[in-house]
Image 1 (cartoon, helix red, strand yellow):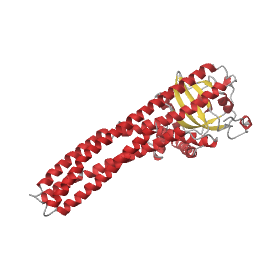
Image 2 (tube, one colour):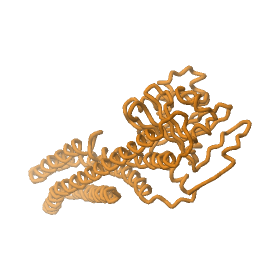
Image 3 (cartoon, helix red, strand yellow):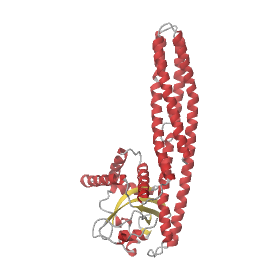
Length: 405
């Protein structure tokens, strides 16, 4: 969709600088943050001349309302060689301000940042959080590192485990809200990936619930032994059953701890893979817009070599597309591992079902104590039905995530 909004060239005396929802702008810096290139939208919004922008530190547009903790997280992430997204308030040469949602990415010789105008619901919450964070910095004399920790506390309170999860949610919301406002057709692939992130969250919840089910089942072998001791000598077979059940449940719990629990388990890895895939897809869409804009640019961008900038941006888009494809392969790999894990669990589960059947036989045979044993049998039945449902849901969710690729 093409726009020609003359209001963007009319600047107010105070307040917000003109920056259209349909616009995108980019800048490239060296490793020290010195501006090496930018597009015309960046120059127009900031109201600087090319000779003032090129060669200047990027902090020339930093607004005093911005908490230092945000930039601490921002630069720490970039210096690790990772991409990042963040809400940023900037200032212009003539004293105006403008908000952006910026995605930044390492590139040869430095970093490249692309921005869109934010309009999502998350943006309203972030403005309030930044104001509170800035007040804390000023009143408590917080260091940038301490401020960053405080910001991470707010992010975790919002239900995100990492900053990357938060920025991915924010980026996807901004792109979808922006697209709707510009009356663009819904991006089905993007919507499916967003659903995959939600499914990955549910997958983890189901897994954690499954672990709790197994923890609760650990009391059953002990209860069986207690019953067996009360009904000796007739309880001999029950003692054997308790030993068998204890052995099988312990083996399953150990398998769980190795393959399901922990940061490196396939169940945890899939959420990280799906989240990163969504972020890369969103970032790539913004970079592609910038690339198209730069390709159509007819004006001279200072002394910038436009051909070099176009090639650099094209290479970055291709690189990120490759990363998105790699992330998709990892998602499929982890989903396959989860399916395999569920199959193993089902096979092991058959052994527990056999034990329950044998317990029912013993309960019917025993002249006394059968009622208490019946209670244990009912517990076993309840646990097994619940675990079977969890395994079914986990397998279904992993299959849905895989189908979205």
